[in-house]
Length: 233
Ligand SMILES: Nc1ncnc2c1ncn2[C@@H]1O[C@H](COP(=O)(O)OP(=O)(O)OP(=O)(O)O)[C@@H](O)[C@H]1O
Image (cartoon, rainbow, N blue to C red; front, side, top):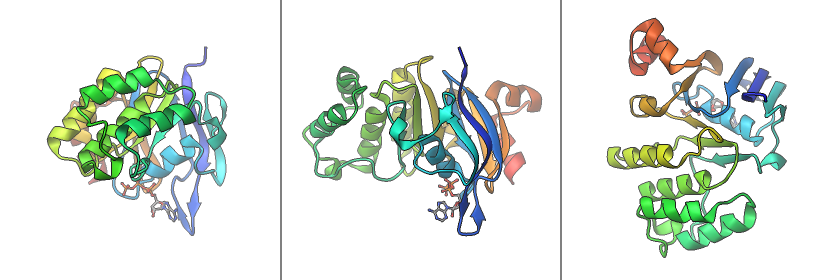
């Protein structure tokens, strides 16, 4: 069995003169929680969209389970965007129903269990939920899909520390390891460090480092935040 779930071969994406990512080569093993970190504009969202098949590379290859990433392969990848991703007029219950209709792999029982855990009022519309509640609902929808790859773009952005904690706890409680691999982009490095197996660090569209967290800790004798400060500042 091939243990590599995502492979990038010299991937280039250009936006009107800007190049991000620039010639990224990367292999990500299945069954891990992987953090994509880096300063603003590093290319984190673009990387996730390329893997989700929502963007196509201008050069190189993006392979998911050995085949080119493409939107029509959404049965293998759940993508949670930082913004949007919910219909504001749907209640939580209707959102679950909608996901169940659209995605054959949607596990409604898991969704209900997670909604209880996240203490979300199922009669409220997504538009009336607070930002933190919407963040939790989006996580429920993404993790309730029985897909091998879950991509979470900035799941903690703009949320208060208690909500961030509850989202991370929900993530580690409900992720189906080792069947699922989670790739999440974040600026909240210190908070996500305990749940990460591996880190992909980007800067200006370039890959700075992709490594298991333990190696970074052992080789540098420091935590991820110290390593990041040393590397990026
Ligand atoms: N649709 C687009 N059109 C033009 N430029 C884009 C587009 N999408 C991304 N870019 C550019 O590509 C670069 C990488 O953007 P990206 O959003 O991937 O970075 P990021 O690391 O997710 O940033 P942030 O942490 O601020 O969310 C940036 O310079 C951005 O301006």
